[in-house]
Length: 119
Image (cartoon, rainbow, N blue to C red):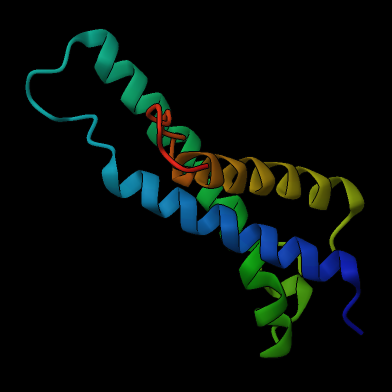
């Protein structure tokens, strides 16, 4: 039976996976002309988003693998059980931050009204 916790875990994993893949596609730590500091910052960004992509991908893949009949003991690095509250909370936290950033970026800046413009 699918619980609310499992659904939230899967949705948060999907949001994180999508954003991580988007960020990884746009990050180029080996580009010519970068300073050592810029290259280090980009490499750290790649490491962080790669780890988030792995976590998000595992959250998305685990229920699908269970439906396909894969047993928990068959995969060494992936636990195919119900998600714990702590795991779901962390994924939801990152997912909400990602969505918040996207909403914040898309909100247009209010223009000042000129004198005489209707309200």
